Amino acid sequence: MIRLPEFDYHAPRSVGEAAMLLAAHPGAMLLAGGTDLLPNMKRRQQTPPALVALANVAELKQRTNGVGHSFGAGLTLAEIVRDDGARRECTALYEAAAQVATPHLRAMGTLGGNLCLDTRCNYYDQSYEWRKAIDFCMKKDGERCWVALSSPTCLAVSSTDTAPALIALGATVVLTSASGTRTVPLEDLYANDGMRYLTRRPDEILTRVDVPSQSGWRSTYWKLRRRGSFDFPVLGVAAAVKVGANGSIEDARIVLGAVSSRPLVCARAAASLVGGPLSDPAIAAAADLAFAVAKPMDNTDFALVWRKRVTRDFVGYALRQLRGDDMRARRKGF
Image (cartoon, rainbow, N blue to C red; front, top):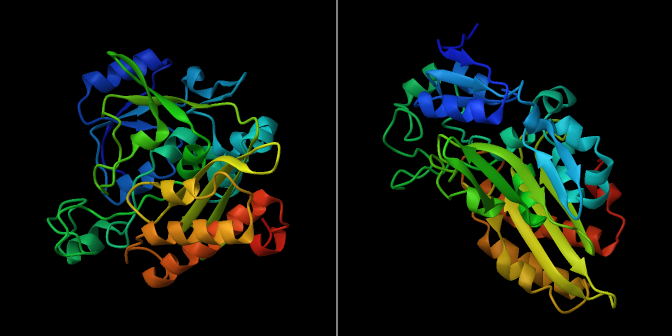
């Protein structure tokens, strides 16, 4: 049995109390559902001296509808999946949440936890003894990236499903600390560095996700993984288009997951769709542009060359679904 390391445990009942605890305990980490953090701690990938548990903070479980949508970061992924408003108007978020892990883990894992999910790598996500045998890696206890020996930065992969979906929906997040709050576009929460992949400060809590009105928008999320029931993504594609009265595309967003240390916004691919209908040539051109910027590394499942190649296919599938094509058979049961 692999045991947790020793740590102090704090269970605040408000965001303010949680923020004060973070400020008072350097190195402390937030515990929401714990589906990723606790296994990491058992493997000694993360060894915080204290945990600040958020399960009793009711503010983080609020859900409001108005002109847009507001989701508390403490809502479980299962609660997102059961939310009719999310399914109807924030379809990409619903589809992403529904494809995370298993029903048991979705019942525990939270939206905020998935957005802040630790980056992954075949050389990092191993037991302490395994990692010690290869002399560790730069993400934890070592000095080099075993994926690319000359790389000055860690190349561990962003494996969050909900982040690409919410970026495609134009979401912003609220970050709260003892010194105040700030709101940032979700895209700006991430950095392309496998070790320092979040711009959230250690004393900040991601408290809320705000999605603007989706009037006129359609969205979807497609996920590639070896086992369709529960694996992390080896490719995620979130796409959203705003369709005008004449059927032409007024705005678009395409975001890739699991091909970089951060969700990858394909601005040129999305821009190429604006001004015309979702025709086969337009979809093919956008898929080619997304393919060009996808740069998966050899640090997760499947061959990286194949993973890059199917980026073009999955962007095409997503855009065809947004056009109205029946893609249920291609989704294989989802």
